[in-house]
Image (cartoon, rainbow, N blue to C red; front, side, top):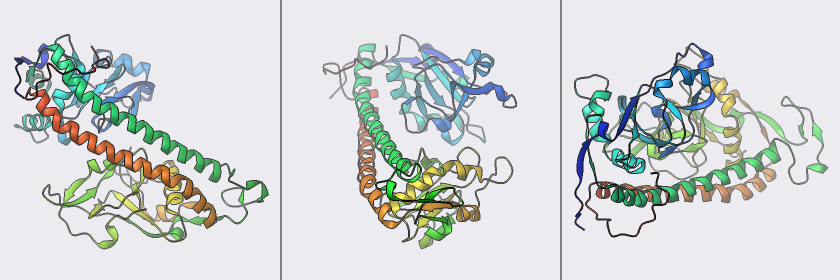
Length: 418
């Protein structure tokens, strides 16, 4: 279809106020707390609206950053380094660090439309930021003078309505995944932490190094129930390869996100190729160290980089029990890090010597019978989200550019912010 709507060329600074964030003094611990979100580029992976961040600022920190305060429905763009061009919308009053430029939209542009428009321009931002500098930086002065083509607001609303429909489906599936994951974790806690498993009334409790445990259960080191614990490879990145390598960014919230994996062409030892049931543990750095995710699908020609460890179960332990046990140990793994700030390491020996509780096989099997269908459904919903995202991303540039005419389409726009 040919677009009959004329697009107006404006500059970013014509459609809102542009603010660059900053970080309050980190030496003052009281600048940080739980009151306000503090957005950094690492918080901006794979979501349209940001409702949580790894770090938050206190009311005191907010007063230090008063000039950088952002309202809900602001549009944030990361503007430095390899993360340049990530885009996210705010859901509440918040702040960002200095690596982000944010637009507080005026009445010429709808926040949702602006979000989608800027989401198509990541390569352009990266190219502009790389000019004349070793570390790519898209400075505020350049960013706010970039051109942007705008259709009339009613057309913006329809375009945003179409694209938001896909995002709402993705968000609904994500909520279902979160509910199913919490159900599995709740059953795990009830059976294996609170020891209220079926028939627990008839089982005697005995002493162990982990405290009282049911009779017949074992306390073992992780090395006793694994066949392999080791770091990954130092990859040779190649965007034309079919092989992929998992990095630390792929592991978050107990999940594995392969969309953030990179392609590489280095030969990989067989043992370092990930397998169904492997647990991956982030093993270097601060902030991400100790994060855990289980490989719950068959992935072809996939390895991990040297910042991640494979922990592979042996025949003594059920895969579902093993995975949820290690996810529960995330705080423990994080505390095991040693070394200088910024170079903290989770050593292989520390992983191997971690003590875990192992119930009899039939208990593990009963647990798996209940939670495996939940976890498989989570995988199906996640795959569906991938297809929805791909369809949205194919439509996005054609809608934003006006290639597809939406003027006469009846589209639900009730949930698009004014």
